[in-house]
Length: 325
Image (cartoon, rainbow, N blue to C red; front, side, top):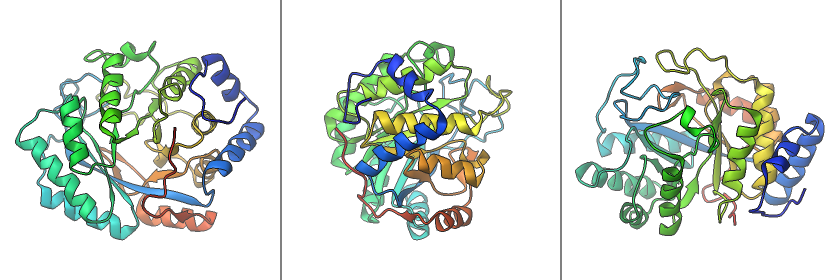
């Protein structure tokens, strides 16, 4: 198993890593992690929903879809001043990256997009990294975001190509990759990961990581999410995944994409402190920091500070993320 930056992984290789006895897998992943990152540092990110609900997509996991009857209040795009006030609070609490999510299928150029560009400029002026997730974008929009100073664009592939249409039918897998290509071509860093616990197989999980690791450049940030079942969505009755399943995915992502930041994302609120520590040992070096992830819960900031202090971990400074290839 080569520890360099590879772009020719197979599902069989990924599955071999995934199925390694856990103690050996953690040892392998920790070795890779230490060669590419400071093992004592964790990047803290904050996430705000800037436009909530009413999305026309049918993502089976998402309570923001207009097709489902989840208990989510639809909110229009919030104003720039409110966003920047939230970003300032997040910065003061220790976050170095501020992420803004809008429940759109794709970006429509116009006044709302112009407001998002102003939000990006404002977040940058606070000395923070800026990240947005707005759905699909074209090359011109990606260029405008780059000109505004956007640090990163999040656009997850969610699952494997083979399982994708079991979760989403309102767009196809290649459309996801097209948006990633526009982001990359504009010179914006890529934040792209997926979700486990949606009924997919272990091979689907491995295939998702292979898809990411075999991109021409690895995503600079790879969020690893566990499904948070929300009543009213098609996946609302699913049992949450076991913590060790998430640990294995973090470790696999670390081994396959050594220089990327692996972000422990949705589902963390269900993890014990011990399970979160295992994820850090497996190579996770970023968390979302704050009490809410778009519309789902997250550990509060005080709990996270205690966890990091007990673990002897420190918050990474801005621009501490390593470059990937």
